[in-house]
Structures are given as C-alpha cells and as structure tokens.
Amino acid sequence: MVKLFQWEIRSMGEQDPYTVHTEKDDVLAAVTQFVEQYPTVSVYSVRKSAEIIQYKEAI
Image 1: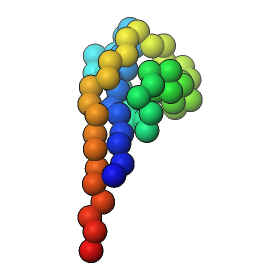
Image 2: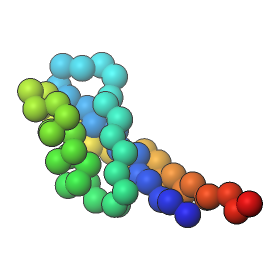
Image 3: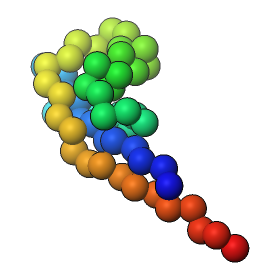
Image 4: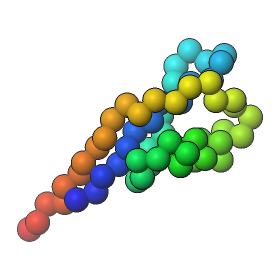
C-alpha cells in the first residue's frame, strides 16, 4: 500500500492552482517541493485536496 497526499498551491497572479504530491502529510514538505520546482513563483495559499491510497495487486 502506498499513500500519497495531494496539495493545491495558489500564487497571487495565477488563476489555476498548482498540484503537488507528497508521501508525507506535511505542508512544509509540499511547499518545499513546490519552491524547488517553481523558484520564481510566490505562494499565496496551500490546501490539502486529497489523500490517495494505492494498493499493489498480488498475483
């Protein structure tokens, strides 16, 4: 089983939110990952939008 967390990050000037996935339920990890990917975009708000559980199929 793999658990992922989906975060929506908004900047001041953008209409659509950016989506970031993390393995930890940690807003700081999400923002850190976002800043590493988009260093020139400022963060206005962060919202956890989903908790995703993926099961591996046993064969």
